[in-house]
Image (cartoon, rainbow, N blue to C red):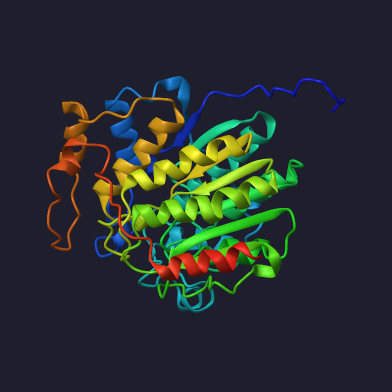
Length: 379
């Protein structure tokens, strides 16, 4: 840039939502935490609110096997297709690829569904590489997938594939921020010691996959912050301003990939954290100005009401919509129509049907969080 010249203004595309009907007609099975509807709820809720006009929605393509081999091993991709065709996993598939396990069962769309999630994230990366903007892919965020096997409910790793698409397009500085209750072990494996990728993960301590320790730097590419159970909105704000925002800003990313797994919310059955959805929205709002390209993904989240409300609210924020204090009847009907799909869990409190935003969940910022932020600040 010539000294004294005005800054270059990038042409920004309008916010885009990438989704698919495959999520409406598939689940991991009646005994799996991912039996609950999630992406379809977000699509229905956003449409009931008038937030998802046709020009802002794109149907996710299904990634082809060759495209998945940008990171995944060819024998594993072939096994995933074979498991879908057979409707079951062979003993070799279970032993070698971890298919047909309790965590990663074989179900009728076991290849098509994750390949659609990967296709959506890869498409978003391609679009953002060409034109700066913001894209929401709630079906993405499967951050545990490994090159040659399924792992932690994740058959493919769309996060890694999306970042690799951005890199292939010539973007040299990418930040990945992960707000899921579980550490992003697959993503860290892919980009450890890569100077062009900075990874920041905030996750519950002592929880599967038991990686992402405070001392784990992934060859200098990662900042990992395990947080204790009961992690609240005030603590999330301290982490946002004490770790996430300064480390993103100093990296000056060409693109930001943000994983918004909803299992850090208080209502989630698979974690012991206590955030409101306002804490996520505060983070998204603060991060948006820090990169010209922002890809916002889903991830974990196993309470259908809390997941649907969070990811819909995120889309409303990205799309510049005013978030209502009380939902209109059509939107309430979407939430009232949800269920656990079995398991005997209680129905939610009435405000989970009638509102989009949680009440704030503030609390003390505990000493262990202050101490861990201080350790990370010295790196």
